[in-house]
Length: 578
Image 1 (cartoon, rainbow, N blue to C red):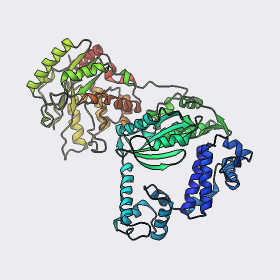
Image 2: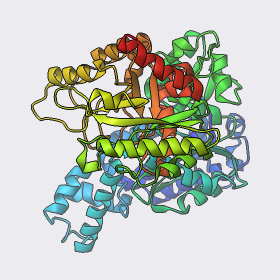
Image 3: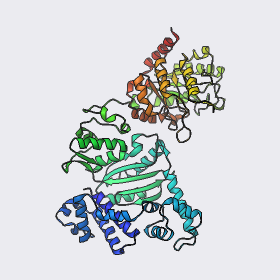
């Protein structure tokens, strides 16, 4: 059994005993034992088996016997009995900064408060102001603490989670006590919104690593600090959990805490069917540990190819990896250029040339400029004369930008009747058109919106369908539409479906990409950039595409500049019947 699990069990026993107002000497004994075992270099399992745990200073005979029994059986009757005596909500209350076991016990026994919600209500009713040991200031602090819990209980966009994760990684990454460290959880899987950040590290000195974690730059509040588990709130409100394990357990713990829960359940079932047992601590056959030094070795031991983190949602990825198969997934380096960026001609913050040179710096061969069309007056939409001026500038830049090409395009609003925003003779002068809905109408139900989109898709000048559902993550739901019918229409009409990589959109939803694959339609990973940093949004789009199982050949902008130019012309010609 892993040392960290033993330490966590002893810590929880000490906490619950203190909460239940049991003998303080016993509480301190469990606290001392947990610290001693965490700091010891001894083989705990071996000492337990030989009944020599008391050799570790701070571990008494009674606790040593309990630890030995726990290691042997995998269960702690004492811990289970203590848990049965304490409502779960009471333990949850101790997450509030400043509420330790003693004060929590007072609230529980004297006020019959058994959860955070009841505590918030009591504070709102001013019931703690006269309670012994509390007072008005304590009541205000508790309300602030509850607000803090609610703050980190909220969801965040993926970039916010990534920023918090990388801040911790940079702070701890060079510490000599850290053997290996990795981001886990929904951030590693590239989920579009995250509730918290999980980080897994291996170390032989977990206490020192934990000290670095809770005092890292950017940490706003420490929520919990154990010897192997800690939790903090970063500036901005993101909750970060750190789990420290031994290095031999690291691959298994990383896999477990990467998730998803559904993927893990399926993997455990597979291991069981193969006569093995799998958990966050290891892979076992008849209680014998199977050594795996990496996640890849775990998958191979179970007869599977490596499954990238983005795919671990139990949506067919295990079946795809049977027999060691590793289906190719698009990578950022596969992108040869980008479409859908805005310039100072509409609502962008950079000039056409500045954006072009920024694309060149990223190693891309081309970009497709798509400023807003004239109906988007709120975004400086381009008049026909503006389009002509931009076209002339593109011609000039294409002459002087060596090895780089700018495709002429526009992001045309899809009008209420489904038509595009310019006459056909104007659209014909562009290399491509991204058709997007920006203005929505309250009376548009699923049928009306679907018809509106279908009409735009049927235009021979529509090259791509922009941000197909119109969603804004954590702000606006998708508009009602028959997504299956829209995807099929795009496939039939050779309209490329945009995967808008702006992290507030990530639209088309990655969950729909399986349908796209079945129809043979292509997607384009587009940044929808309005400034230079926005060009790098494609990284989020690539993660979303990988989640959907997208291979490079399914992505329009993995084609080189000459192939793209030929494909744009050929598709339009076919649709015009030429």
